[in-house]
Image (cartoon, one colour):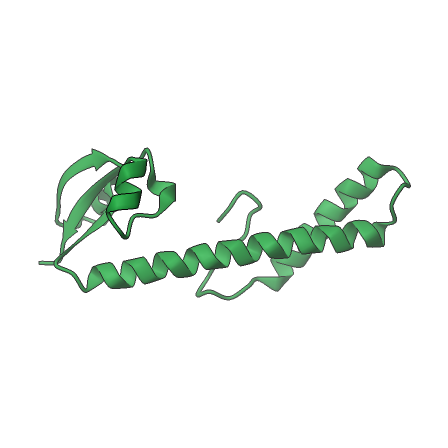
Length: 123
């Protein structure tokens, strides 16, 4: 779920949620413009913004799924320490993810920078 509240499930757009958020944003911007723009204009702009964010979230989710699928085929893969401990996975030493880790070590999403990560072993 991102800052706008999108729920991504199986890479399907939640069009009802997108329309609800677009109307909410349109009503807020219509109130801010106080008659300078019509509600229809505000909705058109809001819908374009919300759809672009949904597409960006979809691309991130697909990329993360590709990284995870690739990682499962290996003997070990990188995972958040919190996820590894919650799920009782066989993991090794942990470290704080840096921007260098995200660039050098493939399979680490940029969102993990600053979080504790570890190797999880497929035994």
